[in-house]
Image 1 (spheres, rainbow, N blue to C red):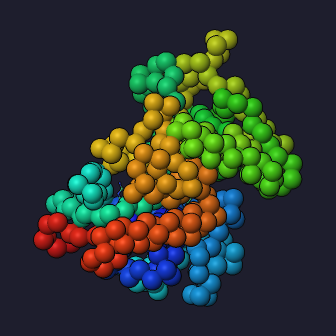
Image 2 (image 1 turned 30 degrees about the vertical axis):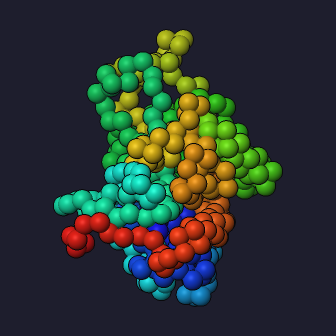
Length: 375
Ligand code: FAD
């Protein structure tokens, strides 16, 4: 069988598949776009530290390596720490992740699924009875449409291509979005940008309990689960959880850096304009406006509902029980991905066992490279 993606979700599924007796590299293969370890974390911006993210839950069994994100170095960039820990984890478990392997299509091939991927030089296809899709969201940045958007002559930057504050020295910057990424950028840019404007579509819901409260988290996960079960597009996570009013954030509010303006109405070549006619010059607009699940490669399977999303419950696609989703919707956090790993691995093994019983031949495993080309 094939797992697509080696982030927290794909690695967690792999861990439990191995625990349930499947042999990595032989009975299941993990394909990852890479280029390195760390899933989406390898691409996070330079200034992000583990302490400034919400919380990264340890991968299952990470303690066996003597590692924990709780005790990880908070002075190093989060992207380096996570990439390093994931690399050690992959090595320890000998997952033999294939990378770079960009999956471009998953298609029906009789009773099996054909997964086509590229290493940048040539394509290869592997067939499998079951596919676990754990591709996250990082590759699908979302920028909402505003009149005049393409006319902007400055830089449109999304969270996923923000690198560091130095790029904005002496510039006029507008940051869009009401979540922790937007706030992180504002605090980082405060001393560097010539001027800084924060806009948010909704009033920012600062939570007073210092961390995201449990009720809000449960509610956010429920909203995601409801949407996934109904096949609707997934709602924004921030709209459910709010933003924790940490001491650093409160200090930013007190200094006036973290006071959002309502959303602008349109974009002009050199700035943004509000409904009341007010104008703000901008050299860059940073869109911290979220992501959508990255699912383009599944298009040939026609899993999308007219409601705008995939119908998924407990990690299984309603339209095709051979396709599992790990890290999707209610599972889109490191703790959700861990839980998904266990649940999905069990279901995958049960499905494979059923298929094997039906065939009563060949061994449990179930992926086969169609072309002979070496990686
Ligand atoms: P990813 O880490 O994105 O892994 C998906 C993998 O699939 C990647 O390696 C990618 O290259 C690969 N892939 C994608 N498409 C293809 C393809 N077509 N072919 C082959 N491979 C492919 N969660 C927390 O719990 N705590 C936090 O502090 C936190 N902070 C966050 C901050 C930001 C800015 C964002 C955007 C998210 C944050 N999250 C946080 C959510 C976080 O991304 C998830 O918790 C978790 O890391 C996602 O794991 P994943 O495995 O689902 O996805």
